[in-house]
Length: 149
Image (cartoon, rainbow, N blue to C red; front, side, top):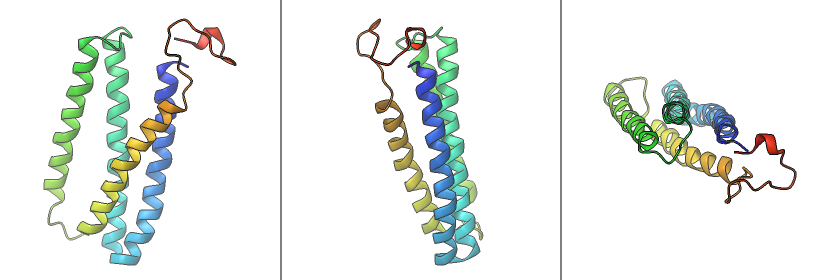
């Protein structure tokens, strides 16, 4: 399985996570804090999609820039740079949203916490469920040789 297939699987799982946070978070947020809880959960779900997109985009960009060499310094530099950008954007969003009347801080916190833990689980599941060989050039049972790395 190519790394792009793993990335696609991670994005699909991430989309499911985003929808789950939006639906479940909105229901719980509305029951706990009314419309501000609903909005807070939806903003948390939107941030989930945004930051998972940043992660996927950084890997695609880094892979293209390094000509597919995922062990190059350029690859890791781009991924780390985008991670730093994500951190700065996250802090900026928190500063902009602080004190807004349409934000319920506790609901927003739990939506973000769920997103962070969920995105880690999504990345692990996408990688673990991929059938990647540890040794290059080895064909796994049921794998077409044309789709291997």
